[in-house]
Length: 79
Image 1 (cartoon, rainbow, N blue to C red):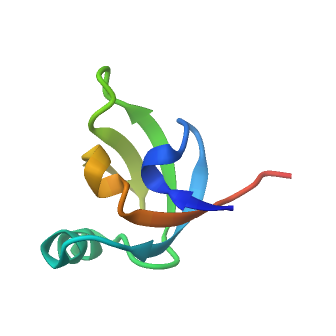
Image 2: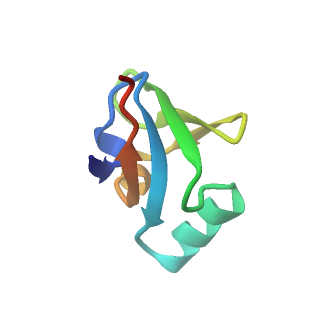
């Protein structure tokens, strides 16, 4: 199921499909390793819901909810 990173729940695992948004933002995210095919896991949201924390490529990354809304992901199901 395709969705955006900001709609995941803590513990959800997904794979990055596409980055959308301003070129400056998408370029910065790509430099941090968020490119198509990258597996990510949503760890938690800050107490007020922004920012959120993910793991990608073995490191923790905090993103603003607005940035996460521009990251299209494929939710990985655990069967």
